[in-house]
Length: 79
Image (cartoon, rainbow, N blue to C red):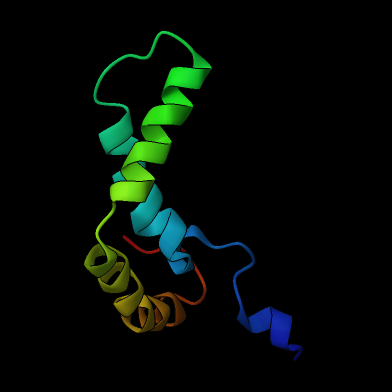
């Protein structure tokens, strides 16, 4: 069996940017309607730049447990 057979390709369950950080940024930046794309981009940048380092560390520290749950699910998605 090839190594790629063991790793779910582009799994959002195994990417801290997908399972935690992007959710945080979008939930904060999209609290209000934006009149245009430039305003939305500015809001996203502001949230990203003000994100506490401890939040990023916490999101990444859960990686091993998430990896173990994906393995237990046979490579499928987890909740």
